[in-house]
Amino acid sequence: MMRKTFALCALLLVPALALADDCKFSEPRNLKLDLAGVKKVVFDAQQNTLKLAGAGASGGAFELRGRACASDADTPKQLTLRQRRDGDTLTVTLQHEGTLRGISLGNRYAYLDIAGSVPSSLPLQLRLGSGDADIGGVASLDAAVGSGDLHAHGVRGLVSATLGSGDIQLRDIGGLNLPTLGSGDLKASQIGGEVKIGTVGSGDLTVHGVRGGVQIDSIGSGDAQLRDVSGSVAVQSIGSGDLDVSDVGGKLTVQRAGSGDVHHSGVRGSVDVPKPR
Image (cartoon, rainbow, N blue to C red):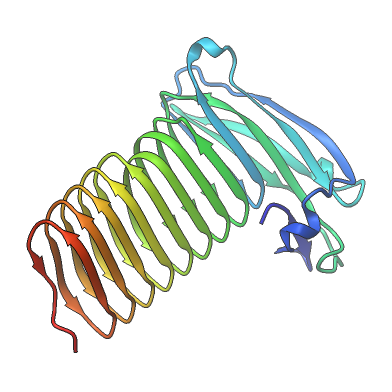
């Protein structure tokens, strides 16, 4: 999902391989972040590509650099990188401000490809539609992901996220709170604290290496795999999906299960799961 296409006034996804290196017409985009007195930074990345790395204040000014790419000469100027202040919150928006008409799928594309640094001490909020984001070294992360891809690593605090049909990969984070997982997939490893999952729809959840416990409210038709959990695992309900649990330091509890299967091994504490129907 690294590049995007607009069709019939709407943004449409094209295969990543087809547009992996396409940038026929481009313009540079640079932005120095106005961070004086800011306590939170929000990035609205939409369908674009964003890479951020947390850095200390000694690293100098915090700046974003990149390019606006398009298949025609008039479109790059419509791709903007802007910031605005609202009290102690700074919002950075990657946006397409124009309207493209009469474009066929696979023939046209337009996107922003932006990278830069943010203060490692500030919490970060991300809104991601069908784009791609790579976030590392920040204090905490609150992400809403639609059909795009998010990679986050080295987040010292909590990662909170909602996921639609996209993919999220997390590594080396302080904790995880996931209220909803739709049809997408989430993989998380090296988690320093608790993991709290709300609803898993038809997507898949894979969690490895948790220093705390894992709580899941419900699993629908998707599958959940939990491995190497220091604490206990508690699941309220399972529909037609499967739960696979291994190497748990505490106990395993499943309150209700439908047609899905529960597999477990290496649970050091007590095991309380419904009998197979």
